[in-house]
Length: 167
Image 1 (cartoon, rainbow, N blue to C red):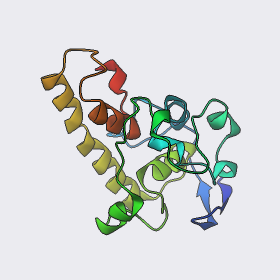
Image 2 (cartoon, rainbow, N blue to C red):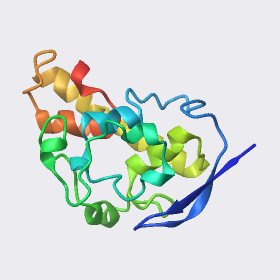
Image 3 (cartoon, one colour):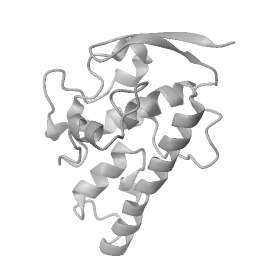
């Protein structure tokens, strides 16, 4: 039976339904290495990403999350570099779907919880797979596990649920 989730934050009001088990039944091509909880704990998006919509997601995701409620704080990012484009740039490039006005990570959080939007899910999985090219760049240009090599690229990979600490 589907579970209804109410959305009420600064960017969106409404609802959606969870139709899959949490963290299960992903598209066969979608194999994220990090959960949303792990990403928030590592430090992504300068800590600003989820500060006004915590009620929508499990409390446990935020127990050790690195968050900055007032403004982006790059020192909270795992690699302490800014690897994000502004939301307006994502909008300009047509990367934002109305169901997820915050972008890919919002889609991933909702997908992880069990929401499915078939067409949008395929689009986002395709975008996620395309980011993998950065894994190849790290392997080509950095000694294994050299966390000082290409830190911005490593942070960007974390933003897309690739665990760049293992490269």
